[in-house]
Length: 350
Image (cartoon, rainbow, N blue to C red; front, side):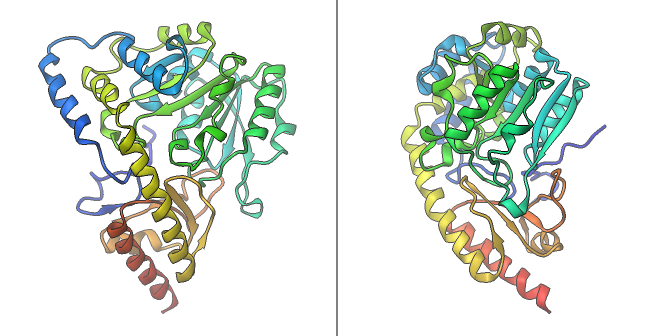
């Protein structure tokens, strides 16, 4: 069985301060926890198939039509269901990027093509991407901002990619799960293009925005009803639990919490980047609630000995030992991280 290696493995690394998973640093809202507890009164009943009320609330939140929303057991399930529904023969993904795109595509027997993001170009996806789109592709995945690099794709370039993909018959899947922690998310989102492009599928999740990874709740936005119907035929019934639906409905009302978390990320991200640069790390200009950087090849093990877990990114295609990602957390937690990272540099020089 292939191991799925990600951040956030608190079961393997117990009693550690976890900087490997990128969640809202404020933690799960208390109202969401209460909604989950209250939903236990209905635990003997099957969940609502199709998550109709939740989809209505998501549509209202996102400013789209209810029929353009599909829910899943985390964004990961939406990705796998989408790939089964499309059953692509050939697809394009950038590297490095989120592993689930490649895993989901490979599970269908799809042939993968890669667009390599390089350090020399700052791991930025540029205009050259347009030149490798071709008619033999069925799907293309993009992550904006990208995981693990945190680099944004300008809206102007995204629109060019979307328009060329439509001409070539390519389904463009854009993962916007981390866009909530960008300063001007509306300037980068493709939501406004949903109604005009039935070859666009946008991925979103509750995981990062509301720090509820254990609940497993994600969703997709798409105007292609034929595709959404095929996805519904390819997913198990009752895939979104009663608890997850209740948590999602309540979470969508937490607008003040989301904005407070965003502002905390903006402040702390800047502070962390400045401190890490001062210490001597190569820090990339990540624009999400995580920071991508280079350090000593043994840094992960050093941090672990200090009871701090960071994300070793060497298992991402296109990356090697020495590339890392850290979450932006509260100032008190970030101070502890900086103390350990400074020790890591001093330790390397000994």
